[in-house]
Image 1: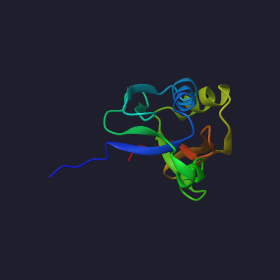
Image 2 (image 1 turned 180 degrees about the vertical axis):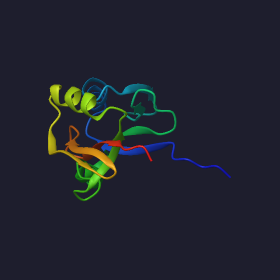
Image 3 (image 1 turned 90 degrees about the vertical axis):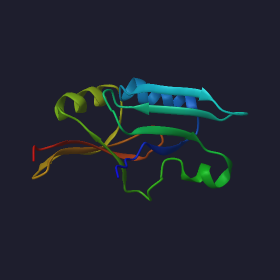
Length: 131
């Protein structure tokens, strides 16, 4: 049996502002933007070259979902963006105005820095050492 995670949902306030952030600030590719019904859309973004897992941008509906925007994991890092060149991507993302809340550090596993998305969810930008 083979299984994999296809999509991870991220609750957003607005589809278009989220698409703009991920495609312009993080250089993700917009994979799909299909209207569903009423105001719902099926919106998928992913890092360039990603083959298996993408991010599903899910517009919040109602007070409970809206309350989760920007804090889907209780303040812990939510997602991990793996890179093959940490310093290239760190400088590129930072130059586009993305806020890094923890500066780069290097450990036994590799190099990492923590940034926040447009809503405040925390991400690791990480280059793992070859294992």
